[in-house]
Length: 189
Image (cartoon, rainbow, N blue to C red; front, side, top):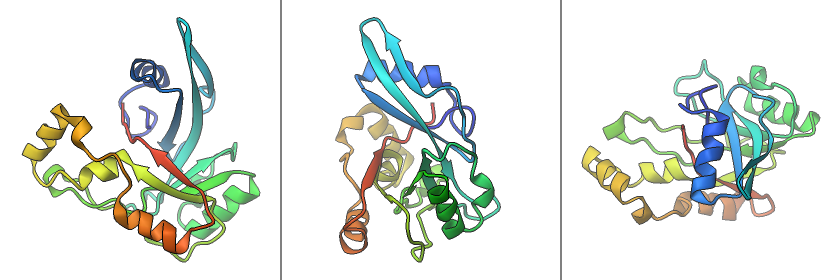
């Protein structure tokens, strides 16, 4: 999830409120290229509570298109300055004691919405923690070839498959068997 600190539109409190309404127990916020401190922890509303974890989604903003996004957790320091070189970034995350996940390894373009392909490309990297197996926005982009399809799924979101893109599972099975995966419900509130 992303907040207004990067390309989202809501605050951490807005995300917590949406999580309460959705019955979610844990939310992970990974703003782009900025580590936003001070919001991690439990949020309480009436007799409910959710845990909000804070990480960072790092990519080279000078690169066009902006591919090779890396999810970083637990590094406890800003690492976006290392985004130009994905392997060096992964090394810096490890050195800082953090976890690194290759974000949306398969993220196709959605021409009808001017969404470009931002899949992971640098498969030569090593020593990362795992990959993001499922990303809601990446999956949605596979089923919306037109704006009409987009409108349909906006009214019937439960009809989107809600599963990893098959090619991502193949990559994980073939290359990453001994690495963990993560799941993200991409939201830019």
